[in-house]
Amino acid sequence: MSKISIKDMNLWYGDFQALHGVSLEIPQNEITAFIGPSGCGKSTLIKSLNRMNDLVEGCRIEGDILLDGKDIYKSNTNVNTLRKDVGMVFQQPNPFPMSIYNNIAYGPRTHGVKDKKELDEIVEKSLRDAAIWDEVKDDLNKNALSISGGQQQRICIARALAVQPEVLLMDEPTSALDPISTAKIEELVTELKEKYTIVMVTHNMQQASRVSDHTAFFFNGYIIESGDTRKMFTNPKKKQTEDYISGRFG
Amino acid sequence: MEETQSKFTQKSQKRKFEQFGRTISFICIAFIVLVVLSILYFVISKGLSTFTTDGVSVIDFLFGNTWRPGEVGENGAPLVGALPMILGSFYVTLLSAVLATPFAIAAAIYMIEISPKNGKKILQPVIELLVGIPSVVYGFIGLTVIVPFIRNIFGGTGFGILSATMVLFVMILPTVTSMAVDALNAVPRHYREASLAMGGTRWQTIYKVVLRAATPGLLTAVVFGMARAFGEALAVQMVIGNAALVPTDLITPASTLTSILTMSMGNTVMGTLENNVLWSLATILLVMALFFNILTRWIGKKGAMKK
Ligand SMILES: Nc1ncnc2c1ncn2[C@@H]1O[C@H](COP(=O)(O)OP(=O)(O)OP(=O)(O)O)[C@@H](O)[C@H]1O
Ligand SMILES: [Mg+2]
Image (cartoon, rainbow over all chains, first blue to last red; front, side, top):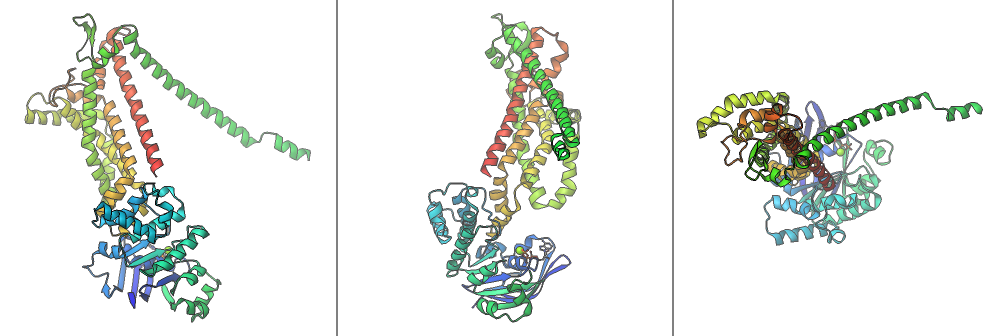
């Protein structure tokens, strides 16, 4: 079943068209990977899914993006609710300059949770789900910027989970991390798909083939090929896809 | 072989040049340090002679509330209590800072978060212009507009702490605002993005993330404003009334350290008690300037550690 359907979408930054007639189904409780060379529009599409593109001046969109069958670009969409349902993890770990606890509690507080006990529970559950509880449970009052980059990234994942999203968007979540932290996050992502639908941008072909169930290959603002990851990596339909996956360009 | 050896051992042209530059800048720095130290020595030694040569007690000076240099009280001690001016200085400084801070932060939020376009096009040039206006102009405007205005509303002369506060408020507002703008600008974009991506509204993002991350910078801005208010002489002197009395309300004439200093400076003879106590007032100003300086450094350090 599709959690998100993108239908014939075009996107412009001012006069520059960054996405051309993109259509894609993103299945529920699975991991979809976006791959492709730099500047081909992966971040652009992922940011359209929670309307973070609204912040870019001159950004214009045509076509439909449906979340559970509802168009997220309809004028009566509540962007704040949408972003609560469709969480995001960025390339650079970006915890707030506050304690670990306050980082995780930020989202729930923003959405009106005040009860201390409830917040405590959410914080613990989110940190557990992000597989970092054991490492930080004694340091919840420590500044989140004082821990390692890999830990910070899992704090950011926990922070995103704390508002109970349905979809988790991750734009190159491991590209700033060392191999061990990367492995931890990959493992975590595979566990998270039980509960969440995950979209992940990656430049790492091994990562895409290891982690994802579906893959979409982008090139110059077009989706050249998309489908089951294993099939695409063993038997790509298009020459361009084959060249990219085998490392001949990009 | 020999040639290469000499090449390495001999000082190169560049090296010599560098040495020369170093020497020049060292001399300049040494000169500046010397000048600053001699000013400090001069002011402080003069200021202390009130207590050493003229035998005034420090307590009487700091906490005495009668300022009539040249006269002596019933117990024979000179009437040089600086409390009225010290209080006056603190009142106008604190009040104008309290008044300016919300305006400055609101203006900064507008310029950075709400409407950067209008902010850059309209507010920025206005602020830069306001910073450049000489203080005598502010004082003059205060004298012709604010003083009569306050006289009409509250009665009395119109001179006093309230008028001085208003003038200082306008004077420090641009400084505090432009420093607050810098503070908000320094907050990394990704903090805002993280908050918005979690479904935070614009106001929640500003209030809970941006202002919070910018707090050290905002505090520094306010302290800078306070330092400027504390040290401002001319404009304050024109509207405060210059009565060396302990302020009891905001609309009767009062005075500040700077206003009394500028008023009396030309009327005393070097070496007399009347002259020495003015240096003592100047010493207080100096110590306060130092205090504000240390405070901003301390805030900067604390903020840096938090980030
Ligand atoms: N804010 C913007 N304004 C104008 N053009 C933009 C903007 N953001 C991206 N672009 C352009 O849109 C195209 C797609 O960019 P995008 O960031 O989506 O690429 P990407 O696939 O994520 O690349 P990378 O792998 O380097 O992250 C690029 O040509 C880029 O220059
Ligand atoms: Mg990108």
